[in-house]
Each structure stands twice: as C-alpha cells, then as structure tokens.
Amino acid sequence: MTKLTLSQYYTAGRHLIKNRNGGDAGFSAFRLTATFLHQELSVRIGQTALGFEQNPTPYHIRRIPQFEALLANYADDLALLVDRTPAPTTPEANDAFVGTLRQLRVKYRANMWLLSQGLRELAWAISARDPHIVPDFLSQKAGRRTAPRQHHSLTPGYPNLSAPMACLAPSGNMEMADPTKWTRPASAGAGDATADLHHQNWTPNRVCSEFCNEPACQNPRLWISDGAQRCAENRMRRFFDWLYSMNLGTQLLIEDHVAIHDYGHNLVQIIQPLAIANRAAHDARMICERHFGFPAPAIKVIAPKPGVTTTYVPHYLYSMLLQLLNNALRATVEHHQDRRSGFPAIRLVMS
Image 1: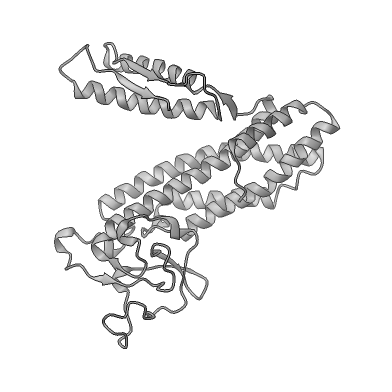
Image 2 (image 1 turned 60 degrees about the horizontal axis):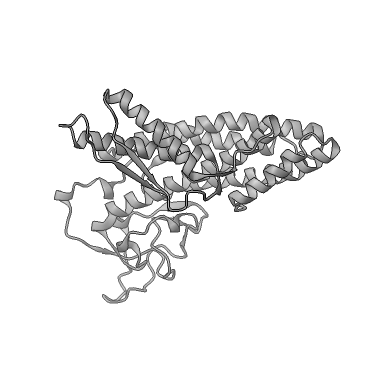
C-alpha cells in the first residue's frame, strides 16, 4: 500500500483540475493518476479483506452475518476492479474505470453501514457471552475463574512485539491461539521460559501483531490469564480502528477522483480550521436549542493563531467537530438539569 499525504492529494487534484478539459493533455494527466488508482485500490481492498479474514481478534467475527456480507462485498469489489475493469490506458478505458469508481463509491457507503451494524451485533454478543461468537476462555464469569495462571507465548523467539493471538501455522492457515490450551513440553524445566512449545515453527501474523498495547501483553514470553479480557477488548478496538481507517482511506481515494472527474473540484482543500469550527459551533447550538427548547450553553472557540491554514477535507473536520460539540452540549445541559439558563460555557481550543 502506498502511503499518501493530504498535501499530495491536494497537489495532484489541482493539477488534474487544471488539465481537466485539455483534450489529449487532459487525458494524459488523468491516465497517470487513474493507472495508479487502478493498482492502488486493488492493493488496499485486498489488504482490507485479508486483514478481516485473518481476524486478529479472539472473537468469531465471521459468524456475524453483517461481517460475512462485508467480506463478500470486498471480494466482489476486488473482482470488479481486477477482472472486469481494464487498465485505464485509453480514453474509453478511463471512462469505464471512472464508471467502476462510481459503483465502488456507492458500495463503500453500504460497506460502512454493514461495518457499523456488525460492530453493534458483536458488542451485543460479547455482553451476552454468546458462545457462538465468544471463545470459551473469554466467556467464563469472573467469579468462576480459577487462580491466575501463566501461559507461555507460542512465539518465544519473537521478543520485541506483543504475543499475537492469531498465529500463522506451518500449513499456511491462520489459527487462533487459545491461551487456556497453551502447554509446555514435560522436559522443560520450571524456570525455562524459552523452551519450545507443542506448536513448532509458528510465526506471528504481521497484520495482527500491532493490535494490542495492553501492559500485560508486552512480554511475549508470558501472558497472564486474568488479562485475557482486557487484551481481547484492546485487540478488538484497535482492529476496528484499523478497519475503519482502511475503509475511509479507500473511500477518500475513490470520491476525490470522481469529484475531480465529474464536477471539477477536489475534496482535499486548503482550509481555515477556525472558520469551520465557528460554523460547527453555531450549528451545534442550533441543534441543542431545537432539541431542549431553551437557549444552549455558549461555545467559546479559542484560537491563539486564528489565521492558520492547513490541508484537510472540510466536511470531515466539520462532522467531527459537530459531533464532539453535540456531545458536550448535551452533557452540559443534562449535568445541570436544574437550570434553564446560566450554563457554564464550553471551550473549544484550536492549538
């Protein structure tokens, strides 16, 4: 996957807009970007599907219908892009490629809905300890657990990362490591923490190894069973952060190119954050007043450098600030339920 900065998005977008109606020169500019996208999107969608299929969480997430549908969508998207859309090397092929991007844009919005719904189903399954989703070693109630035991990592020769819960077996298949079933050979001494375990030559999953920063997991040779729940939740949160980021990054690539091709503007722009913050603050107060029926708390936007500019997607920043301010306004009003005015002000600091 090629990492791109927002400045690169903006620079490339301005170049395409400048040459958008330039005949052969315009197509030459689009061909370079479109050829890159044709390959890059395949890589990103493929990596997203692979990470989802490997599943670095301990939960059986593919048993949730929304997640299984999401994985099927990734396979369809990859087939559409790789098998049914030729490389955009001619104007006709470029038009077909943009048509494919329009289809993917619609599908990615549906994918984000599936992801959100699946995450809700997973949260419910975890809270209910659904045995179809939650493995045995995580479904035990705290009061019934035995005394803490020490479990040795399947990867004693991999000392610089947290012990992965998903490992690559010699067969090439991803296998979940159930800590309650980890054993050491009878020949190993009591203090021999480096002895080989019953699974030989297992290697940590490159995708999975970054998904837990739980202190109890930082030593890959040793894992305490009481930390299993925290580690599982940590891995799940970080995995879905990664999955959302992959989806949003892919969606931005698609939507930015379509916006330039169809409408002559790019999504990534040079913005003044203070102006967007003031608009979000105004709209959040209006929403609060309509909901509660009385004047909303004041919002003070504090900007030591009010004229600063940066490169970003204006709608993304507006949406995030609006949500944060909506939450802050509601919390302030509900915390001071005995008042109808004189609420403490909310401060939004731009640093």
